Image 1 (cartoon, rainbow, N blue to C red):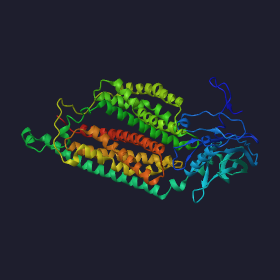
Image 2: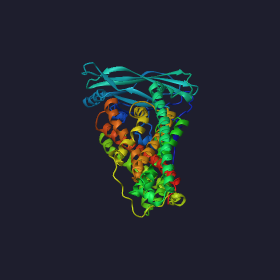
Image 3: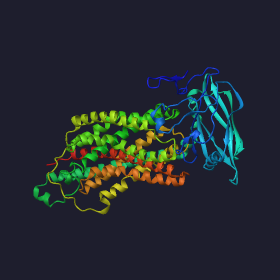
Image 4: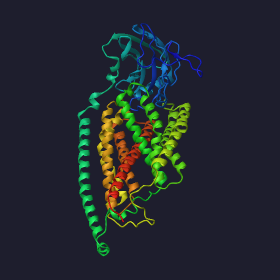
Length: 577
């Protein structure tokens, strides 16, 4: 039997066939009932048997979450009780009857009015069906009572499943409704490796607009990089020539000369940023998020993660925990360079910044999910598992990275000496103020990704499977290049105005991309979806806030790292007395 015995679970626990299980003739095929919920609210899901459906007569099979991703995504597999055997056809058979009292009828009517539909699994292939429908006037409501299953097989493997709902029965109180099913097997030429292709939507993801947006963003990168290179090279060459000329002047001529520009702040440009503990923690977290994004996209390109339930989320959690040394290394080294003393506190802040944000949002939404009795409510055991990952995996690895960062690259080897007394910042035009630069800095990075945001949102909030990870990788590269170019230009103008507060300005100008993404999420919610209700609204805007914040921290870290290299480069090449 396909069951598992463990020391903690001595009795036989059925976990269903693993993906790609090979069957013998007349071997049992398990039909799992997953969730039911409103069509327009994808995340508002409930257990299938929370509606007064009846189960088949076959013995119930217990199911426990196999992966952390399944538990977090609200997968609630329950055995249907239907007797299905490999290659054995079943004519229309009644498997149970529903005693339709007023309460059960009201539950079905509510589900039909809100366009409820359910999801099932056979051999990890998803199947969707609608609960029922109303007549044109909306007065009478009908329940689909006949599940007509057609299963395709190739050799000894299942490669295709189709469900047809028939048997429309009017919902009348105090009646008995017979639920029936049939199974038809057909030979299929579909290869097992290609069985998920029918769920993909190439016409949507490979539409001309998608290709055009990538091409448009790529042209923007070429134009922006060329523009930045031309402006900065010409400007810096002119600046270097002017500064070299000043070196040849005597003191009297130099005093009478027109001294201005970025060289004048060389004694303050490497001054520690304000709030260095928070700043270094944000930079470390952003570098880790970038590493996670890069690795997960590469893994998703090599492996079809969408074919297994919760595999994408499980992979992301594992990669995030494994890349914790990246966070500690960059955050710890930057904090040490800026003269920070409380490195243990910085390590804790850096390690728990992102997990606290995600868990805090999930904890808040979990209360609403529990109130709604939704399957999205995270079990207590899963919460404990996540906390254990944070304390026993993420924190120790972060400690290792922090120690390495402080010892290997924690020395403040700046090309310029930092003055003891800060230089006063002169007045400048309003559009050169850091606040204005921060607000405008995120427009171009957002413009390079907003079309891809639409496809990502649609795959997560609607019923599309995102599989074009090559596009996502290209967009990530474009986003990083555009972000670095924009922050370099912003920082150069700021330094040229003799304002040396470039660290936070470079970070926030790149991170402001997140503000535009979150604003776009409002547009998407109200104009591109039909979501409704407290649960779905809080779920949407809560997790969109988490996504936008993480994206902002990543962009801010990328922008700062690129700008930091630029600042070190220009001040290294200038002779300073």
